[in-house]
Amino acid sequence: MNATISLLQMRRSVPVAAMSGPGPTPDEVETLLTLASRVPDHGKLAPWRFILFEGAAREQAGEIFADVCAKANPIEDPVRLAAEKSRFSSAPLVVGVISRAGPHPKIPQWEQILSAGAVCMNLVIAANALGFASVWLTEWIAYDRAVLDRLGIAETEKVAGFIHIGRASGPREDRIRPKLSDIVTRF
Image: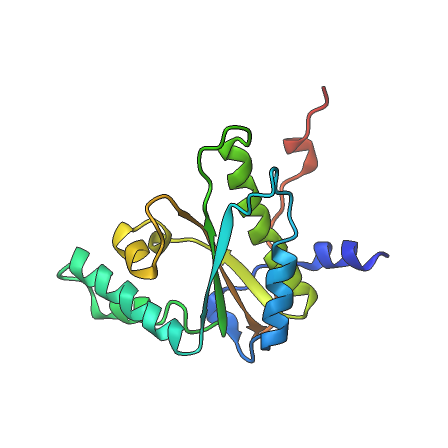
């Protein structure tokens, strides 16, 4: 069987808590981002960008998440705050894919948004092809304006996803996939 088909058949998301290091080397990170960028991009707008969280930056981001959470919920549970602090700590690399989609005279904004989603999926597939585990998440931090401001994400931008990349600590379990008969029609 073709290696690409095999990869797509075997790709599984891995829970962040089941990830560890080592993470990608600088050369592998460059490869991952280069491959992620090779997506359909009508008009060659590159309507997305990347924010890398690795090393101490993961803990710095966690401090932001816990601080924003505590300010929004003054009686917040300390266990929850600890979880927010460690949100980016398990995977050695978290890549924020930021959509910069906006009005354009020829390129619909929807196509720009889809391009950012394609970047996320290419990144997930490339990470798996290099032998890493990955998961594409958003969660509340992707939508909270206070968090976004502190991460340097403009009001005109949106988080397409935070892609966590590391090593799986165990086997990846599959989930139930939709039956084609439930999702396919013919015109």
